Image 1 (cartoon, rainbow, N blue to C red):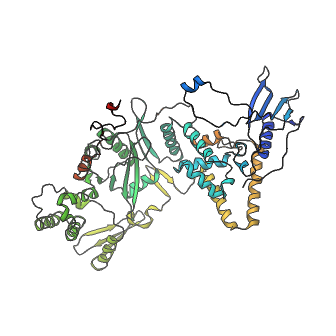
Image 2: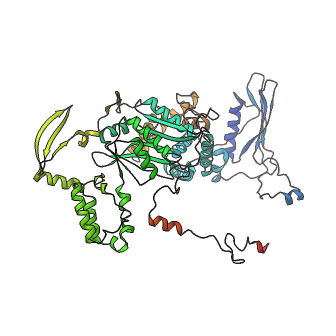
Image 3: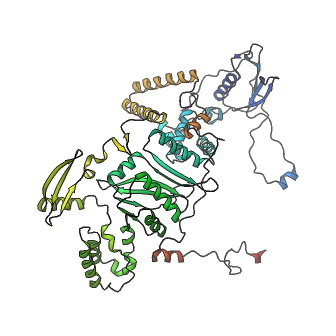
Length: 590
């Protein structure tokens, strides 16, 4: 809530150490009285030192009239003027000893002052300090817009009057922040990847540019991803997703399944084109980073991916995604049969049963085809190797396996291999199975591991500015919650923070992060962008907007083909019965 302060007005002869100090004093006076100010004119000596400065009321001057000719030729929006020839101002002059003194002060205004309730919205009483700016920058990282960040800040401080800024101020700062990194997104992204590799040797990435030095493709994988691939990289699945960034680049994540049957990421890439060359480049970088081919690769039915997988992963088995295949069952067998619960149950019992061998699968498949008269249906698109695809079943499959093992399995051997216990188990069919370390609960919990003869210690934290900032905010919220509404505790906490704030303001120095203690806009932007400064050399230019989706290379289903035919026709003109325009823009009405 805005608090009314006692009026301390300038006095002729009042001295200040600096010119900025004099202007700040008049600014505080204007905010307390209830008017806005603006810096009017200055006079400098031969050395460029300001010797005289005029600071006037914001309503000084008058609106210039526009001639009738200009009004007819130039369309301008009518605006309400706030200039009423106000004479209130202060004149500050520099003395021979270097001090600045109030030479002239006009107190009387020709207009009424702003009310006490509305004074909080004056420009002189609104400011975005370092706290506001860092909060907006954090919201930008979380993809939170200006309006929502303004409302969120209001919930933190209690009410809108306590924000000491408006929603427009939040929008303007975000605009300046985005304008600062304009045409430097790609360079900022690549520089961030270089910094991550400096912090961790196991972090690996590659990028490529086109003829115009525009970013065309990127691949990266951190230490945890490479560790996960070493443990669970037998089966790798990757697919392209769209509309995840402003440049419409194709995001290609490499995913797998861990020992808890949860999806994990092995790496990721960004592509501007979905052609064979781009996919070959991406898969080669993935293979180079992981040092070996996966046993099985699961993709959708993209022809470019099929060619790229065969070229790069020659020893891997390539399988199509069962989910994509089963989505087409309805259009293949017809509408009536696709809704038959008995048929779906029998079909799923064959397709999703990974315990069937090839001969058993063929026999069961032939039976269901013959039972429902589907033997002559050549359009049935289900692949024979669908039984080998790994699926995501969290609980029920494990429950079945445990129950079956209790009655039909037995432990036949036990050995210690490199610190891991291996159990030899036989089931009723006399087949041997081994429980390796990748299926244990502690497989993902080790903080120290080896990658390419490099020891990666995940338990050690990198002491950088962002980590300390996050920890500080966590401690602040924890202290506020521990106060639990106790007015004495809250007052004590606020007193400590205010004392530290005043100490930082008095020091006026820079810390290691480059953020000025006073909290200028430029310092906050620099902390947000890192070491990338405006006007610096940009070696990697922003990519062009990709046009991949709908390229026609992917195999389309009948449903997609039918939907593409039902395109909305253009508007019909009721005057000439032609398409492409309406009656208002019809040539016949010209």
